[in-house]
Length: 307
Image 1 (cartoon, rainbow, N blue to C red):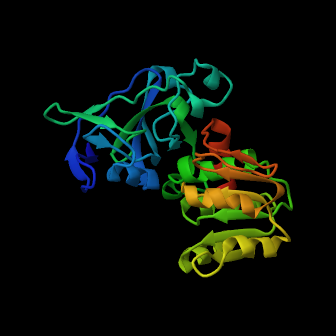
Image 2 (cartoon, helix red, strand yellow; image 1 turned 135 degrees about the vertical axis):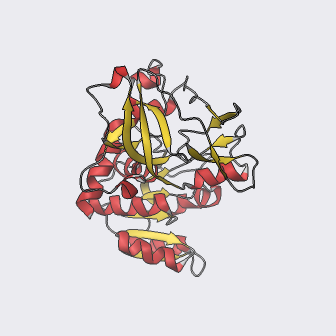
């Protein structure tokens, strides 16, 4: 099979021939139809996320089931259209048993692949930049008929992260005001889920007008170009003192530190990658990183309703 392999950081991926993966009893073989490029993949390429090389990256995957292991028969069949989740789990630790597999303490490492001449190629996360993928059945989710395979590939990462941020981490109530910092893949999906769940106003912040225009299409009611005006002052003016919920979709420490000034007195902030220490005014900082079955499937269903 063909796959795009990273041999050294800061270098282009090479298209190479690998041996097709074999599957265990609890696995399925997926023919990859689409794999999105997440900013996390770029961080591996740039060396900001360490990984052994050569390595196969990519984790926003959709495809069709090609082969089913003995333990997955009756659950899947060849031809099924599926989204591939991006969280391996042990299923035995306390975090997994409580439904928080994103915090798994004994996360399995995906099996390596081999080149035609027998050299090992590691897989970072699922390793979706390939023609075929072997993954456990618990990582597969059916695709609603209304979604194309190309659209569905985005659900397993950026859409599910945004859904969890809005629905679970932020505990959003209808009528809550919301501020979204960063209008990339996660930020735009956060905006559309805020619209689905009744937030108002929905304020999008970025430094590019093109991204702010996209934010309006996804449901932002107000926009702030942070390169042209003070986002803290403007957001306070728009919301009579501060927003109810702030969503940081950059993974950048600078806006996190300042965002405490953008909240209402009892606001809540959801971040896709929380780090550091904060001085907060009766506020809660939470992280939405989870990939349990319900959010993945629910995010896919909501995407069909919004079309």
